[in-house]
Length: 349
Image (cartoon, rainbow, N blue to C red; front, top):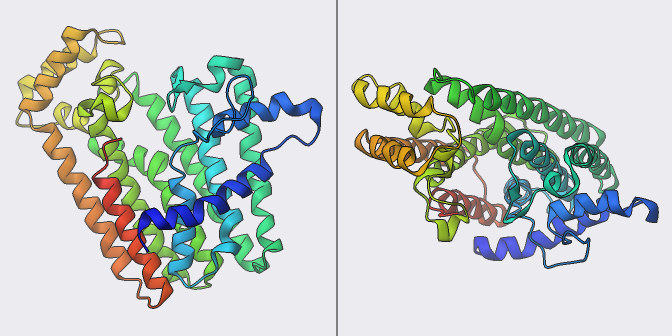
């Protein structure tokens, strides 16, 4: 079974669980839950149903595939997969407010439509719904011990996610961010939730902590590769594929890996000073400064550096997967995970 077929098989399970959880408990709350449903991609700004525009649902499918690869029943793991997706979306609602981003997935952000205060409340609701969704694991026959392990993993991920966002926001006003600080930030902000999605799937299926740790490392390295690839796309991506203007991250002076590389590169001191001068300008940067920054990054080989690092983390992810011996149907799920890793490294959006 191909990865595309796996998504077709697993996504309806996730969407059904999500829609069951994110619904108004009373008609008087339809506007409140409508904001969440809008963010999830199920309704438009008038709260009328639309064809789903809710993103790739990468994390819940990763959770279910890891459960299957560990020999588990994906039906049991659906609440865990849905909880991961709700946490991811809670963080996006809040990120848009904190970053001042007016658009999400090609549509106006929740806060841009309904105001920051209502969006904060909607994001908080998604967070609580994630916890409530986890309780449904017991209804699916998951043991209390495994349920508790899954809950502890998700709680830890939520805290790390918030720590990563703290780092990311603190970097906005700094020009001394080095590679280790950058990696600490993306490990928390991006990689942790992918790692935990993989880990949670295994925790539903197995009591083996070593196996869960191996799949966690797989997801973590996959997440690091994913974010670095996203950094590349944010500077050199094709606008037709990404839906964003070229060099958006440069315009907003984000401390992504290519920029951090140049600012800390010992053999490129002149370009580093030039880039520092550009980044001292108020954001957003103008077209001339963006073009100058791109020239500096290209001359320093920043894109090649970032892409090579992404390939390195991709290789580490596959190495962790190789440690997880499996057979039968579980082997097919593991092959889907390999295909997922390859698709993330080679993506254009």
